[in-house]
Amino acid sequence: MIKISPSVLASDFSCLGSESVRMENGGADYLHLDVMDGKFVPNITFGAPVIKAIRKHTSLVFDVHLMIENPLAYIEDFAKAGADIITFHIESASPAKETVDKILECGCKASISVKPATPVEEVFPYLDKLSMVLIMTVEPGFGGQSYMYEMADKIKALRSEIERRGLSVDIQVDGGINEKTVEHAANAGANVLVAGSAVFNAQDSAQAIATLRTMAESVYSAQ
Image (cartoon, rainbow, N blue to C red; front, side, top):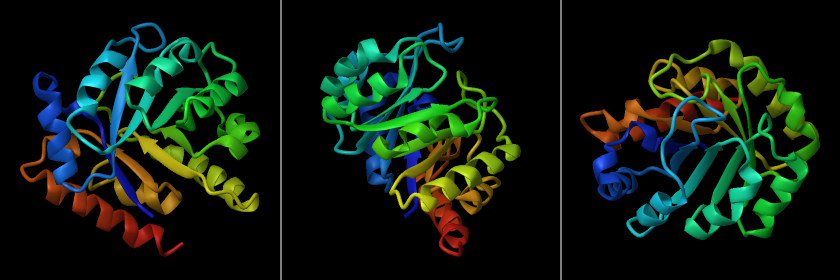
């Protein structure tokens, strides 16, 4: 099943509450919340207090992507703020097993992300406990980058491993997803698609979400 997760990074930060409502009314499945600390990636966005404030405005699934150096220390904060899914990077300083266990202990779904240069096989030891894996299709840290088509091999390898082991794990892609790239990602095996400017900057966000979903489903369901 295809899910669309609009990235708040492309929204109007001055009105995050109404922007989240706009995405919910537009048919989004998740709301993708990028947390950056200025250390793990060269940018700073927002933390748990902002997510807690947005949570009051929408019932959308909060898809929280931690691009921070030590995610283990903050899992409880983000869970209490309203996160439903918490993604952290395998490249971070936190031990992966302990971080996954902490996410689950806090009642959230666990997800691990890999940067473009990181082999996807690094997440395989943890797949049994994960609900999702995020494959970055740009270098994390900034919005508006171009989609890396070469990441398809990683998506395919991950989908193959998930199916070989009979698991139910979503594959999310983040970076450069729009009408020109969405079919490529879905055809490789991704089923959760993070879209930023393609949705938030569209004249009709609901139509943009519907179009991305339809295009992705047309190739994903054919596998």
